[in-house]
Image (cartoon, rainbow, N blue to C red; front, side, top):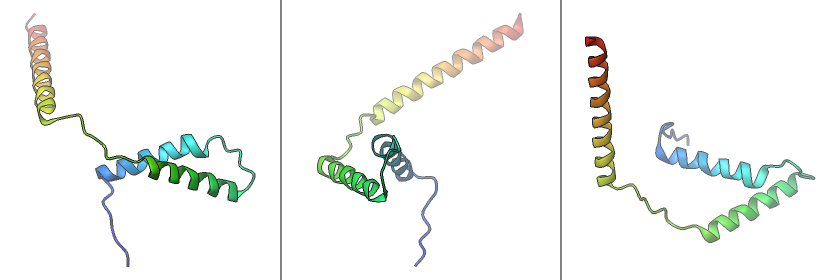
Length: 89
């Protein structure tokens, strides 16, 4: 059975981050003697990750988002005022 998954999703970003970590911590430097050594190192990394995995605690709250949007609004308004003053002179 073929299943189409979304190509733009937050879970996809998490997968990319995981493989980036694998690239940096497991595969690099590429000094393997054979494929069995690659397999063993990947399995050891997987076991270590699974043993220490914990749910991610989001620290960016809705009130943080509200504050960020308010700052962006002020920043945009300030730049619009500066550009209109610059055109008037």
